[in-house]
Image (tube, rainbow over all chains, first blue to last red; front, side, top):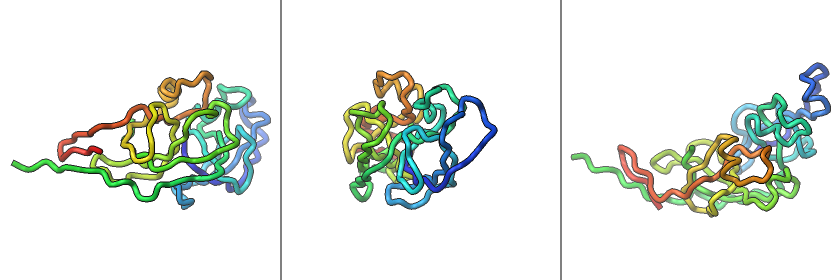
Length: 102
Length: 97
């Protein structure tokens, strides 16, 4: 799953029948600091999120599994609304030993 | 599978019911030398990992659901932490805790 911000909605009258009644939202993937990362995409909404909210979404078929019709043609789906993100700060220092050249 | 460091967590009240009772961790993918590679991702914890751990995460739906031990066969989970890494050896060196 990845964090994203809802930045718009999509209206599509003619679509696959299994997407009838499904809300389509435009989302912008973000990092933990809230900065945009990558291009916006369209995702189905499965939990009732709306414009301006920070959400998390699942990629692939899994994104649509929370829909009334789980086997829907979906490649991204919003599955939760984020209240708070906790980031511990820097990526903790790992030890890395370079092999000595013989 | 991807190599990553657990860097935090998120709080989400409104979420799909498959996530209830599961730990959602913020992970930072890293390269084999431990440098950050790409954006932070959100993973379900399947092994009891915590902040600071080096882990392997599965980024594929079918296997992710299996590791997450989800009761719902149609859980919308696409990323799960499947193991805590003790050390990763590559041609150029070793990454460890």
